Length: 206
Image (cartoon, rainbow, N blue to C red; front, side):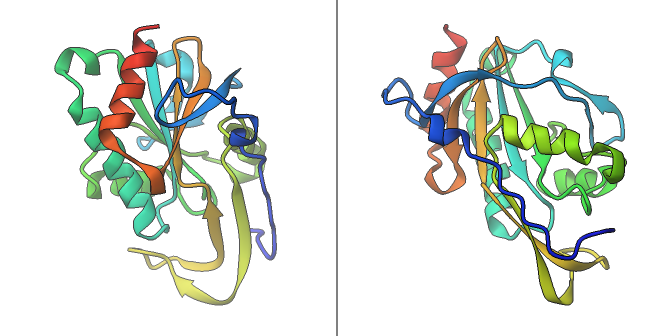
């Protein structure tokens, strides 16, 4: 794995936020998500055309992240569970890793299981040929990702894998509408499940 010191910062979509109060979360300028093809936690190909929901909530995590990524995952699950069974039929959830060097499908499968959630968790299968693809996905969703070298190697969380780098990311989820435009950003640090549900309902009713 070729990581010594690499720093990548993707401009956040929030810089393009529009000054309205339509949503409880950060209202984003509608912008269509670029087409992509990643792989889920079962190792199967996955793209947005496979989802016909009115609203998709897309969270960004990595499995070596500390409590804040688990908290985001649990918050996404809590918001989804506040929806009625009928409302849930028009809403889908996804999580995308910000550490594709470490997070293969198998690690994401166990991460998903450990957090007791069921939605797809996405990564790449060949970092050498697919890195640009997942970088473009981060950019589409305004997710900042920074990779820095560690002075010493340390064990990855819940793994015997030695980490010689640290991932710093925007811990957030983005709501996208039926036209696959980004619409609302919810930072993990600002999460309010009832307000997130209200934003989902607003998007579903458009």
